[in-house]
Length: 111
Image 1: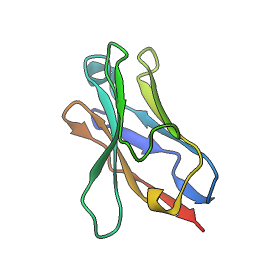
Image 2 (image 1 turned 60 degrees about the vertical axis):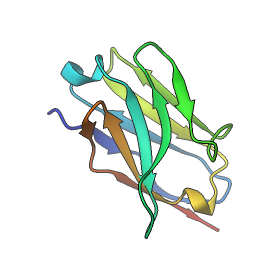
Image 3 (image 1 turned 30 degrees about the vertical axis):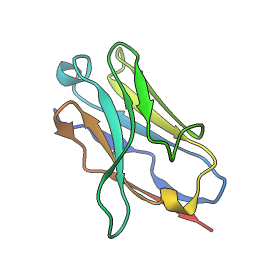
Image 4 (image 1 turned 90 degrees about the vertical axis):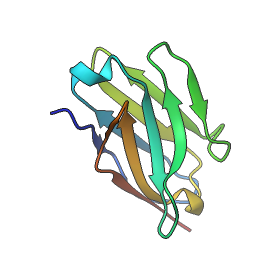
């Protein structure tokens, strides 16, 4: 399976934490950056975080200090640790591995 598969979404209260996972074929995973995007209802998809194969990473300003992206090339898996969640973090979270997108996982933060 080439397409990334996300898991770990769910319903959480404000201030809570969630950890999203993204698994993909080793054929594409080890060669590409991994990124997380999200899309809130009625809004465009937006960048959240990225981790390159060499370890460099980037975060959207809105999640800096709260979210952490990591990856394990041996396991062909990446994670997005989300802490101190806010209602505005609600949306469908997508994993991107190079040009390949997952189907998304829903994250809902209730106030």
